[in-house]
Length: 544
Figure 1 (tube, rainbow, N blue to C red):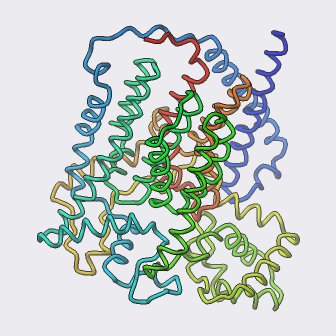
Figure 2: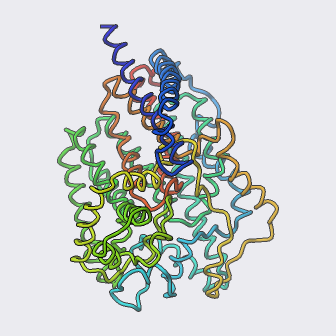
Figure 3: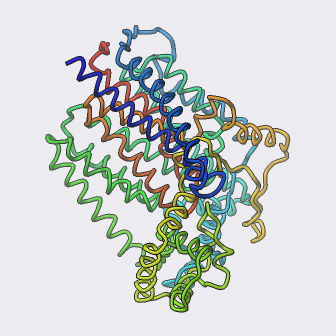
C-alpha cells in the first residue's frame, strides 16, 4: 500500500514537472523569437534542457510534497494579543495605514485609458467604444463594453464632485469607495484565516503582503473595473470553499446573500457571467443537502443575467458590447496568417469585409490584438462573419503552425514565470482633461515617483517579486491542483475552478500577460493557499 502511495506521488510530481519544464522551454522560445523555432532547431539542447529542468522541478516538487505530507499544524493557543482577538479591525487598520502614502501621493485617483473612456461615456462625450458599435440611440453614449454599473458609479461620483466645485473630490469619492471595498475584503480573508486556525505566522505574512506589496495599494487607487470585481471574486471562491467544507442548512438570508453576490459579479464585469457559468455547476455537484436551494439560486441568476442584458439595458438604450471583443483569438490568427502568407483574391476580399486588409499585416502585434480589432467593420453582417469563419478554418488547415504561433504569442505569459508586462497603472492620463474636466495629481511628485518606481521594480526583486508574477501564480494553482489529485481530495479542487476560469478568460483576452485580467486569482492567492492548507490538514487542527 505504501509503494502504491509513493507511486501516485511520483507520477503526480513527474507530470507536473514535465508541464513546468515544457512551459519554460517553449515560453523562452516564444519570448525571444515569437515562435517555437529555438526548441526545434536546437532539439538536442532542448532535450538536454528538458531533462535538466524535469529533474530539478521533480526534486523540488517531491520535496514540497513530502513537507506537506509530514506537516502537522501545532495547536494554536489563545493568544492574548489584540490581533488575534480582533483580526478584522486590526488587519484593515494596518492595511489602510500602510496604503496611506499611496492614497495621499496619487490623490484623487489613478485614471488609465479605460476609466477615462467610461467617464466620457457617462457624460455623453464621443469616445472610441461608442464609435466601435452601432448605437441603439446615438444620444446614449454608454455601452456595455465596460460594465454599466461601474460606469455609473464612477461617473456619478465625478458628477457629485463637479456639483460641489471639485472634479478631483468627486474622483476621490470613488477612490474611497473602492479602497474600502478592497481593504475590507482582504481584511475579511485574514479574519477567515483566523477562523480556520491558519498558522499565525502565515496570517502575518499575508497581512504584510496585502499591506506592503505595491500592486495592492496602486490598484486600490486605480479606477479600473477589475478592482471591485476582484474583491467580489475573492468572496465567491471563499463562499464556495466554506460551503464545500461545512454542512450548512441554507436559510433565506443565505440564499439572498449568495444570489446578490452572483449578481454583483456580473454587474461589475461582463465576463463574470462566464466565471459563474463554468464554475457553479461543479460546486453544485458537492452540495447534496442544499442542491435544490442552490439550483434555485442558479436559475434566478441566469434569469437575471438574461433579463439584464436583453431587457433592462436595451430598455435604457444601452448598446451591447461589440462582437469583436470576443474574437481576439481568430482575428490574431488571421492577421498573422496574412502577414506571413500569400492570399488568394477571394480570401483577401472576404477578410477585407471584416478587418480592413489595407494595413492588416502592419497592424499585427504578436502580444496585443487591439490594433487588429481597431478596424473591425461594425457593419459586417452575420453572413459575412460566416464567410469569414469559413475561410478562417480553411487557412487553419493550410497553416496550423501560424495559428498556433499567433495564439501562443498572445497568451504564453499567463503560464511563463519570466514574463512581466502591463503590470501597474501610475501615469497621469489627460484624456478627460482635454474635455474640460479639472482632474490633476497633487504636487507630491517626488513621493509619487518613489512609489511608482517601487511598483515597477517589485516584480524583478528576487523571490518576493514572484508574488506579483502572473505565470508563477498560475504555477501555484497547478501545484495545488496536482497535490489535491495525488491525495484524492478532488472535492477541494472545486474552490480553485473560479481561478482557472479567470485564467481561461485571460487566454481569450486581447493582451498577453495583462496583470489586471489575472488579478482575481493573484490577489486571492494568499487566501487560496490558506484554504488549501486547511482542506488537506483540517482534520489535524485542534478546535478551540
